[in-house]
Length: 417
Image (cartoon, rainbow, N blue to C red; front, side):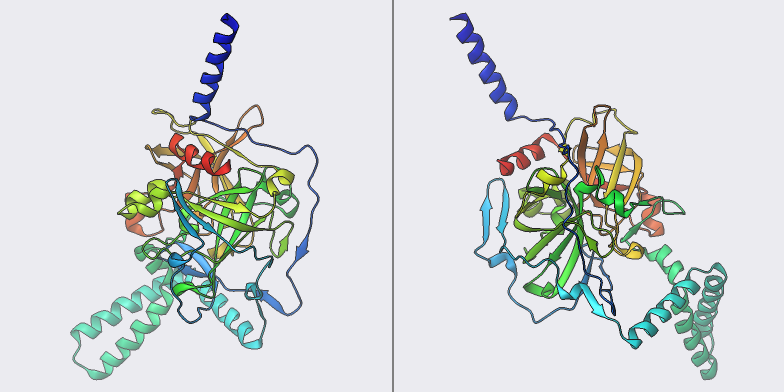
């Protein structure tokens, strides 16, 4: 009788704990995973140029097609109490042709022209002269009545504006680049290390839009394996607030290095945290900028996956060392894996700030750490950069991610079952 009572109490205790999971363990395979390697590089082909979406703080490539109704009306979307679930077609396509464009003489000339502009715009002397011309041109235009002087001033203004890119970036800012210091401190992961633990669990994400105002465009992001078939990422990678637009296909490439893709899996389902979709304001939605991507093959079984935890941050835990590993766009090109370790600087119930350089393209990267027991754990999802404008630097000098809380673990666990 006594034993049965103790056993019953143990079962009840286990059940109560299963509903309040605080942390899970990482899984590292004992054998090195076999590589199913392929490359997209062909003679005469060059990587597609990335463009920046300042509204969403994401990079994309491609050209828009004719407008179609937003994916919000798709019958494949299902509203659940625990989030928006979108079931995708099992498109076996590995990579679209638009990933690369055929090199032409005009594109070579254009690239040389852009390289020259970049070289000049990064020159302090050039920018000083350009700023002087801009100031003189505006002054003459405002205070001179001579038509010839006014014309020359207009030309000077146009020329100066072409050369003050670094000055305008400082004042206006470019949210895509959130390097916090004077130099970028991120480290590029080598091709061999991309295929090894712990970097192999981090992947490049490609979100291809087949409808809506983004039809024909492909956005890029990052994600981290946390289960045999599930990737943890940022909700804004997969769902556009306001319109409800979602990509038609999503592909996950762990271990990508340049144009080499050791592994690939297609997304079967996108699962968006309900608060991110339903929050009336963007600031509230940021508190739940987290999502899951279910894959069509168990990559985590072969490559391994990270655990996740809600208990690394307490009320006084500042200066916790964490890492961010993902595929930054911008000057990094969105084709290589970069990582950086830094300390957390501040956190609240839903957000953590850290002294780590990031760029758009790294949205969805796991904010992770490891312990003496060789357990690798995600504590947050990187989602936002402080931007590079002078105003933003003065008001918020750290990049931030969405914390994995007990409530978010419940959201994850309900869909992993």
